[in-house]
Length: 131
Image 1 (spheres, helix red, strand yellow):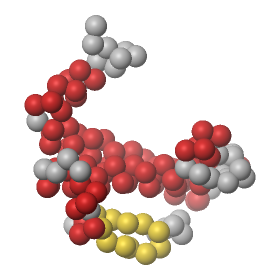
Image 2 (image 1 turned 45 degrees about the horizontal axis):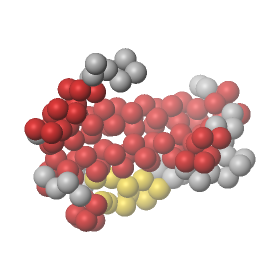
Image 3 (image 1 turned 180 degrees about the horizontal axis):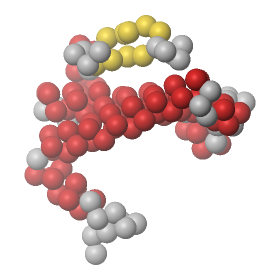
């Protein structure tokens, strides 16, 4: 009855959001941080040559559409954008947990630190205290 495509955690997450939203933000931040680390490791492995086939692939059309990538974008470009997107989810949910605010975009400025160039040559923005 409550299952959504076989996902039995959906009703638990939904009910937790109704009664105590900060725990849901913490859970989302936790899982998004693992996803961000996974994409970082995949990009580094591809750059080291451990996954040469990854560098020869083109970005899927859905990634090109969603992240506004050019038509000749590589799979690595898609991974960089996905990692940045997940990194923003980590930051967004961290701010939600710390401030208790349901719209933390207005309070995010003080949480951002520009770190400059990353390992892969892309700009990285960190949450303060997590550098």
